[in-house]
Amino acid sequence: MIDFALLPLYLTTVIALLLIPGPDMLLIASSSLSYGRKVGVYASFGNATSGVILTLLAAMGVSALVAMNPLALDILRILGGAYLLKMGWDCLRAEAASAPDVQQQDNLAKLLYKRAVFSNLLNPKALVFFVLFLPQFVSTQLTASSGEQMLALGLLLNVMGLIFNLLLVVLVGSLGRPLLQNTRFRQNQNKFMGIIFMVLAVWLLSSQLVV
Image (cartoon, rainbow, N blue to C red; front, side, top):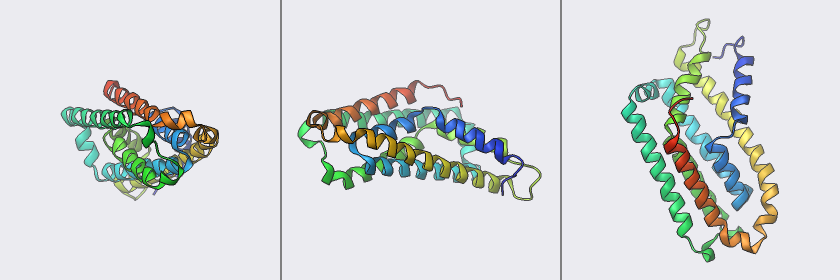
């Protein structure tokens, strides 16, 4: 369901997009650096989950309807920014003694998975991206419908994105291992993540809705 004549250009474009730093990369990298590889892996799968949902919405045309309504996009942006601000505030308020140790990674990993899902779903730029990007590679030469082609293209994009993010987790997680053994860093890791969430909130609320 993908036009193989367009596939090389599509793959090249996706790779270029993945290499551009963005809020998803920042969240996954900072999670891996602060809490270890396992948390970073869960955050990566959370990002992939939201990507699959957005792909399905784009293929069904739902996201296009939302993207044509500026008010809906503004509401999404405000909700997303408020959600990230709340997460940042909670992290900043957390006491140093409550900073999770290695044995607590299971619960933390599930929490970061949920946060990655919702932060991406509430990012209107992600919605607009799927609406504007995927149709560029829909071919009239195939018998498959535009929805089917967008679904295939979106799933391929998400698989490539997941692989890229997992490689990022391995790299950053290895660099962050000495930090996890540092008592001073462990005492302030919640505050570090709080700052990251605040940065993401400002990034989302101040960004223009263009891709």
